[in-house]
Image (cartoon, rainbow, N blue to C red):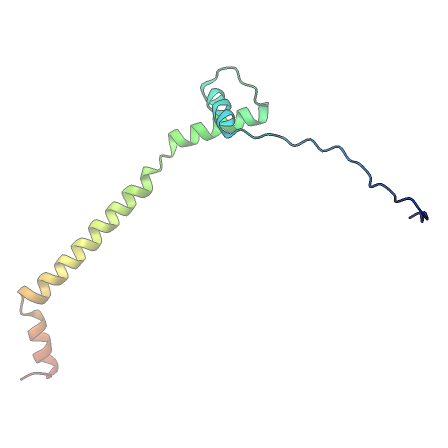
Length: 103
């Protein structure tokens, strides 16, 4: 670094141009690419858009919703059977008498 007595050294300049990102425009371009209309996307981005559209068609997300619904129905049935066994049968009373806790 130079040492100058009465003059300060100016900082180096660099060229920085900020890029503007418009999410609506990007979404529109991706949608155009999925539909096959002319778009300004590169080949790689075009391929990604087509692949994601295909995967969404083949693997709908409602599979997880069906699984959750089925598991909730099974849990509900188990709870209802448990309530029935506890309150409306003599099974619990017989088990308590069998272990000798109540005569």
